[in-house]
Image 1 (cartoon, rainbow, N blue to C red):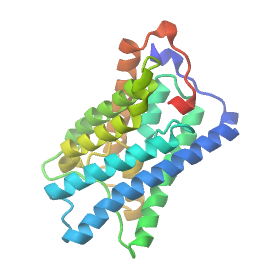
Image 2 (image 1 turned 30 degrees about the horizontal axis):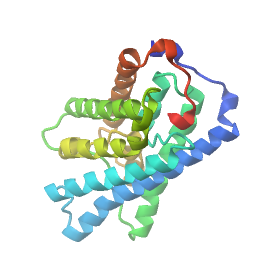
Image 3 (image 1 turned 30 degrees about the vertical axis):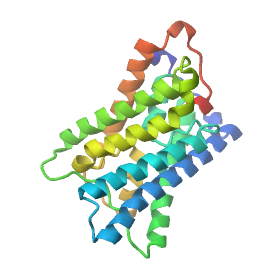
Amino acid sequence: MPISRIAIGSPAEIGQADALKAGLAEFISVLIFVFAGEGSGMAFNKLTNDGSTTPAGLVAAALAHGFALFVAVSVGANISGGHVNPAVTFGAFVGGHITLARSFVYWVSQLLGSVVACLLLKFATGGLTTSAFSLSSGVTVWNAVVFEIVMTFGLVYTVYATAVDPKKGNIGIVAPLAIGFIVGANILAGGAFDGASMNPAVSFGPAVVSWSWDSHWVYWLGPFLGAGIAAVVYEVFFINPSTHEQLPTTDY
């Protein structure tokens, strides 16, 4: 069972050179992802007089986030595994592929990367701020939690199938593309309802810069639950425990 392989690690692990390098890689990857993804929404608003909530704005957001995530995962894959998402890191932790100590390094780096990206956007746009994630009219917090659970389940399940599974073979080559595609598709499905975060870091940066925390917990609870469920399902049903090996962090 995946739960039996969960490892806490030691505090000393946080200061190890490879952990710090992996943290720096996650910081840069998230910065790239959030700057491009959130920046595309700001650019669309500027060009259309706040039209980012239109169907065209939704498609633009899906494309920008899908493209940017493909790149962000690719550039971090050989160093940190290219998680680019605290929920993905949590899913890897639940499956026994990363220790809690190293996960902490990733989480801090991912959150800082998002905040810095949003601050850079604010400076570069002359003081415009990225909008915090929020629920659409008629959408309750529990509606949004379900959305985030299901969407993040799909994301982390894709990560496991294309990047984590030791039987993945050549399919691992397309892992960053598949991960970008599922995020883009999920934004098309859920963006009009709760913004389709699937990533606590993506929600955290705009919330800090705009200092808007309404229903922010939704964007942590849903993704972490979805990631944990996906990790357990894939590990239990599709990865043979007898042949399982602890994977290096560069392979999720």
